[in-house]
Length: 103
Image 1 (cartoon, rainbow, N blue to C red):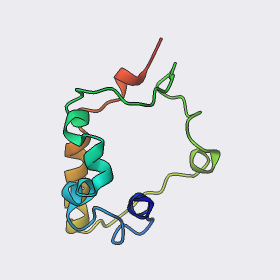
Image 2: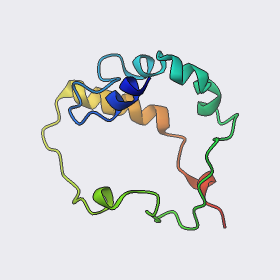
Image 3: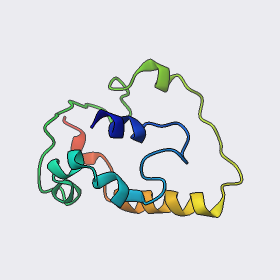
């Protein structure tokens, strides 16, 4: 199971889990089936992890190695890669994070 999770974090997008078959490739692993992916996407179950966020710009939950990185502008994205980006954006378009903020 850990091997599949690590493949989600692969820096090279062409080697990353989900690059070839997208969403279906990722959730085909038994770990994700146990998580009841469909109910999570439909927001029918709560996360087992609760993060207390008082501000939507708060970055305390992220390691400094990532928050100190300078953003990179990617130019000349190939159409096949742009299709993958659009596919992933469509999956998460309703997740804006507003429900994570506790006052």
